[in-house]
Length: 376
Image 1 (tube, rainbow, N blue to C red):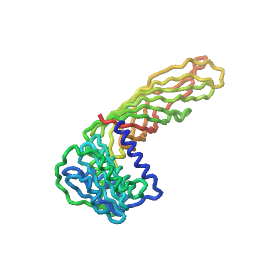
Image 2 (cartoon, rainbow, N blue to C red):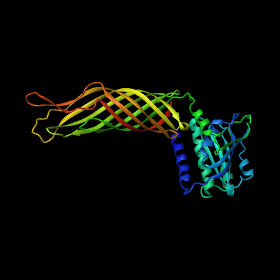
Image 3 (cartoon, rainbow, N blue to C red):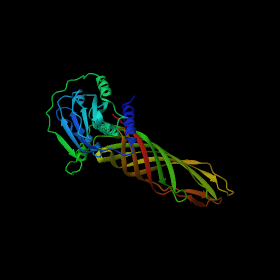
Image 4 (cartoon, rainbow, N blue to C red):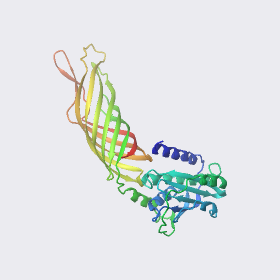
């Protein structure tokens, strides 16, 4: 199973746990012990603090040099209404999580990390920590007893790599009733740093655009692709099919459809912890338009259909939402401009031309896209 598939199943299952509540519980405190190397992974702690902001009055972090998988079972329970959490993020390919709630109930989980504590790995750990805390607050149904949790932890593989003792920083408390503690600002700063990677997005799009006075709106479907770099710039490509549109105004009607290939450059900037990106760009394309006269009630002789090419330019701006670790949903507004005047004429027997339909030279529209992300 792919990395996206495994993580989608884990995230979906944990989301179902959280969705089962009729009223969301709130912990008095969440105490987190982290083993994550010499610096204790500040970006990861910021992600967890943000995920728990609405679930706890305060979140307290402490750092240890080496994880002890027996510690959760020896430690004293959390204070009334509180939750204690142990996270071992020092292993190269996975994180190990144990959560202890009131009533001596436990939640344990191994989280595979294909690229370690990168942006995607930190986000996945944060979401699982949030769902785990929700589970132990919800009660017994979604959690384990002490004996069941011990059996689960004992089945974990032995640690493959030794961990060097870190430089333990002082305990850190994130309080959510004071503006001075702002984990989201630290997380946003970390997300804005270049990651040094290139990403390929592949997906599909649906478009509505203005077309003409006689045919106000036409629809398109498209296959879209984009390659983006660490600086936020990207190269985008699109192959689109425009659904047939008809104008049956007498004396003669018209049916029009089109195929288009477009490409261009765009730049993106991220906000809200990296989940939302604002995108703007420009591009150009070629449209192959096919048209055929249609009967519209008049006694006319119909000419055969024809096709022609039109070069277009495009300006675009919009937003993209990271709906999951490797899934993006975009809403883009654009405006296409045709480089030549296009019109469709009806000629009478004496050779006189009468204009039947004239597409807009400027054609604004909106596109909804869904794409999957693949690291190159």
